[in-house]
Image (cartoon, rainbow, N blue to C red; front, side):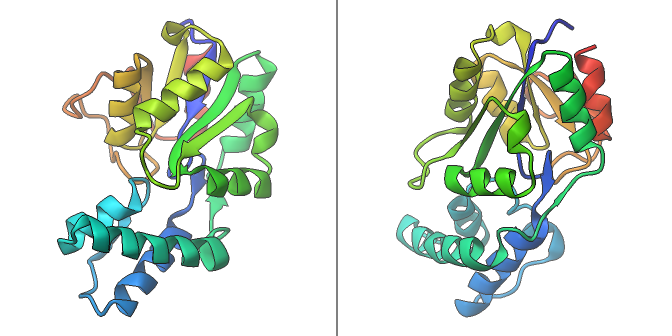
Length: 215
């Protein structure tokens, strides 16, 4: 394990942002008069592009999904963005990694301006060399975002590890040619599985266990 850089997903990896995301999504669903979703399906909205989640859950075409997503972003940005909390052990882990010379960055599918506001609000920005998120139009893929972050750190990709909580993160890392470490305390993975469909160096159940992959 000679990793010299770590790329972190945001939702479900550094921050538990579920309360704000789900509150905004529920508000949109209610305002559209749609049937409420069960808890497990609603939780799946945390992380992936919101327009895709609306489209899949309610059978919306692109135009309607984009309209719902625009309403979601308006609500989330103005009312719910900071309804989040840092996972226990994240601050200590980031501090230890930085002290040991590991280059750190964020690569998230959350819109970049929201991600930067959150990282600054919770004081996580001071650990990061760079922070990359999705574009407003949702054109960038997760692999694109991961590749941008890796290039910015100027560390070889075979010495870079992506840390995330969903198959979207694993797929993006694989497509970008970067190793992947899963966390099970977030919103996607609930335990170690070799059946996630993408290469994975391991799974950890606590943020502090991430450091072991760089020691």
